[in-house]
Length: 486
Image (tube, rainbow, N blue to C red; front, top):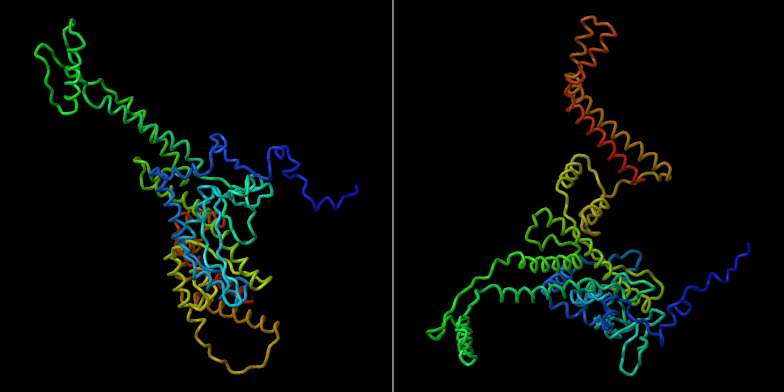
């Protein structure tokens, strides 16, 4: 079969050739959000949802979770002068504000941010990153961002390269606008407001007793109206004046608890849907929540927080790559990261301290990896090392052989010490005494096997297991460290 290699270098499934291409006029790509399309509204309708207390508080919680993360640069393979330049640039930014504005992409699907460029000596720098309202922008059929200027028509104004960065949530080729979490809250918020409205009317209607006035059947409307007016004043002020030939009666409404519960359930259901949409769980906002379920809810929210952090990091690192490219050319750029400060395991810390004091275990790289330290934090790195007396130069193979021999010799000495001080003998002796007594009594081999089977469950092997576990742990750790040094 002959393969047409030229066809490999061109796109086949394009919008122009797709069935949807006929509906995309003037290069404009409408937002495929189902809520916006059904209502014929712009994305600004989602901004009104933030006035809902639960929506607003959930948005603040999402943003605060990301802002509380640790942040910094990972130099990677970037040259030192490039790293210093990026550090100086980031120091000028209001990073908390920038993070908050970029996180709007999680709620609206996409968030354009304009870069303010300036000339600083011989370098181009970004002095600020400012988020702009997403409803001002649209995408064309080539997924390029356009500004909806009044004079630019339906397609919008094509923006210059490296002037805007766009943070998006779950954007795809088919939907460059991303997915807006607030779209999940539109109907729950609508139903919640309706539930409150109906509940207030219900409370007003059935929450107070009814006042019923009685008048003679032959009374005309001219006399009935003053009585009705008096009853209205009585409801408001609890004082009324009525004719002496009329009467009134207070009637308590029948129990409406079941009907009232319907509105309450509707509101609680809407609240639950909102918290699930924005936080990934509803455990921390419900009255019946216990401590365990609330903690489980926070763990789910942490996954969403990590997704938000990745979205922000992607946008910031795009800016850093542009800065490095324009100022230094094709060189590696440092990576800006967000991470959670891990809690140090107290058990691990005590174990590492004990091993370091007794056997001199662990290198500087181990402490940096396990405890999140930076190069230069450890004294073992910064202190000058004593200069050893000059020795004949060894080849690489001889050095490896000598290192392996020394390591094995040290391990053998440690195990010999363990055997000589009686630790292992003192552990094994109580287990073997019953067996030795049986042999001395002249027991036959067959009876010895049965005796051994009977004695085995009674043996206290905890001490032996602990001793052997220590020996295996020391050998395992020593082997790993020796392997890393080769």
